[in-house]
Length: 119
Image (cartoon, rainbow, N blue to C red; front, side, top):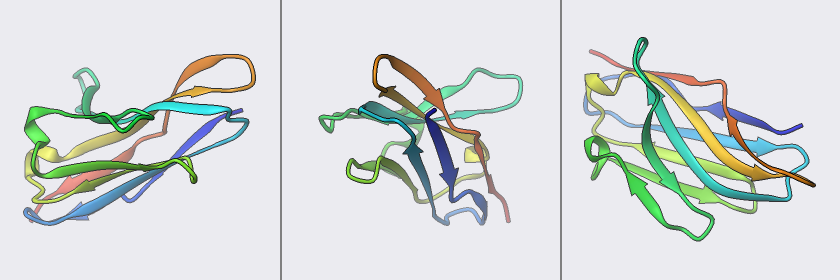
């Protein structure tokens, strides 16, 4: 059984910063791409940032220059440093990972963490 557990969401003022963390646990053989998505109610889940096991990084245009994704392979953890936050960044953020267990490679999602940017 594999789990992704997120932490670090909360309430912050415009212009502030938050750091999200997502730790994978369970019978993990390898972790490939790790990513953060966000979803406004009623809309599809959109990619915020992704990082491959080789370190290739991709960002949504709306967060370039403000957000930084990183990962600690030894800890099976991915981070999202969010700076210069805007009210439009308010939504639920989800961690995503492609993980290989003993016999199969599957997609996994975290439970989501709320980020609210408001004065």
